[in-house]
Image (tube, rainbow, N blue to C red; front, side, top):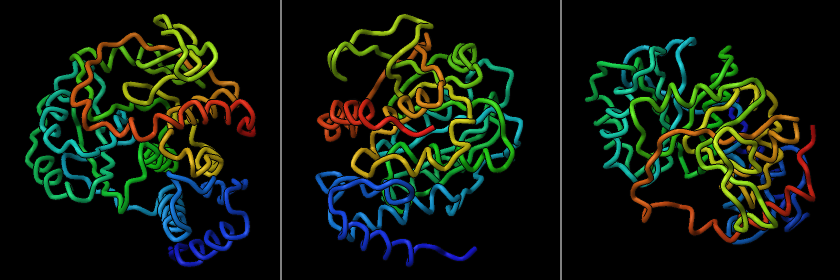
Length: 298
C-alpha cells in the first residue's frame, strides 16, 4: 500500500492555515478548533496523519498468544500508563465463565511501556476463556478512538456481531462477559457507566438498569460492530473533541437511529490517579452542546 502520510499531512497543514479554528467535513474534520487539545499546525497535521493511518488499517497488529479466529468474541482494551495492570487484566479475562472464546485485543497508546507489555503478554499462558491475545503499539497517544480502529479492522476482515470494550482501570467479575452479552442487540450500544442528562453533561441522573441513556461510557460496554461500517464514524469527529470518543459514539449512534442503553454489570474502578479524564473534563459539556447543534449526518 502506498503510504498516504506526506501528502495528507501537507493538505492538513494548508487546510488549518486557511481555516484556523473551523472544523470541516470529511477527513479535515479532525482539525477541529485550534485550542488546548489541538496544538500547533505541525502537531495537528501529525495527529491527522496518524488517525488517517488508523482508520484505513495502516497499523501493525501482532498476535502474541494463540491464534485469533473470526468467530471468537473480540474484547478490545486501550492501554495507557498502567503497565502494572496487564497481568491482572489477562488473568481476569481468562477467568471469565463464558463458553465463547475470547479474542483479546490491546491498543497501547504509550510507547514507553511497549517492552513491558510485550514481555508480560508473551509470558501469559491461557487456560480458560482467552483464546488469543493481539497487540498494537500506536506511534502516538490517540486516546480511546484506537479501540475503534481495531473494530474497523475486524469489520473489514468480515467479523459481524458485537464486540466488548473494557478500560485498563476496571476490575470485573467472572460473569462479566455473559452478563454484558445479554445487552447485545442489533443497532445498540450498552455500557456500564450510563446517564441521562438534565441540562448539561454534569447535571444528570443515573440511568436505571436496562434503561435508555443519553450517554454511556466505552469502558465496560458491548456494541454492534456495524457502528464502524462507514468511515464517517472517524472523519466526522472534530479534532478538538477527539479524546471524547465515548460522547461521540453515543451522539453518532443516536444520529443513525440506534439506542444507547445502561448495562447492569459488575465493575470496580481502580487507579483513579492515572486517569486521563481530568484534562478533558472541561470539554465534556462543550461537546454535548456541539452534538446538539451539529448532529452527525446520517
